[in-house]
Image (cartoon, rainbow, N blue to C red; front, side):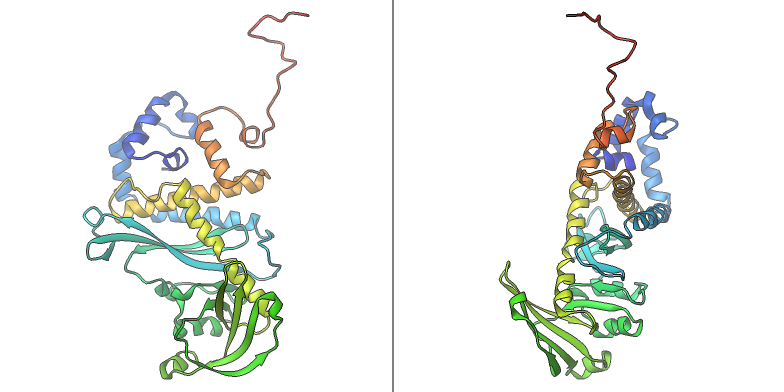
Length: 344
């Protein structure tokens, strides 16, 4: 399955054909025995996807250790996460378990990303009907950490759990947001800030769900000419830092775009729920593995470039450092030559 991700295979038949053509070199990839499409299909259907999820978590722990001191644009001593989801469209007749709409199926990949190194640290795969906000119920919060979310996660009862766990959330307010202002702070409007207020919710149910005070920050982005209103329970960070942190949320959008462009998670090798989750977790493992290789070898190439190079040298007996770092070995002083040498 990792071979299919790295070399952009389209089907299990494609995987079988290519691997059988390279039968003499399969030992180099750790593959023993004959490759059969039926064997792969049965494994996808019956072998528990949690095996691949656990393996991915091992790689994620290693990657987070390597990228622990990575700079993502804002200097903070605490952990900073971005939470979002991406939807993968499916055919309802082939994937009846992934119900989304009346005539449409879909799978959702809910992801919590560590902004240092853009490493996914929590992933939950569900059908398309599961709303994003429900993931907050299963998310294990870290005291002191910062969680950045869009308006799809705006549920005051669930957000109050962040406050009780001493975690920080940053999200956007909806247009019909009802509140009353308690205090305000002066802001430098040349930075794009428009207001920094301490507020309390007005609605009966909203005030019961979130009885504490909130911080409301209005920010005007000069580049996009748009105004953003942020809500947070953090009163210590500067208002401009809150706005800059939310801007870093685009990193998780790039992650979703990257895995859909370079890995195989839009077309699947099986139609069962187990097969879909197996393939997605395999893709995540490949992504994290490439990130580990990039960091350990100090490679300047992008993750996409590394994966493209690996796709064509997978069966070559060449040190990976030589291929990816461009330190080509020059056999100028070799004692053996395939051609005669002439002195000019």
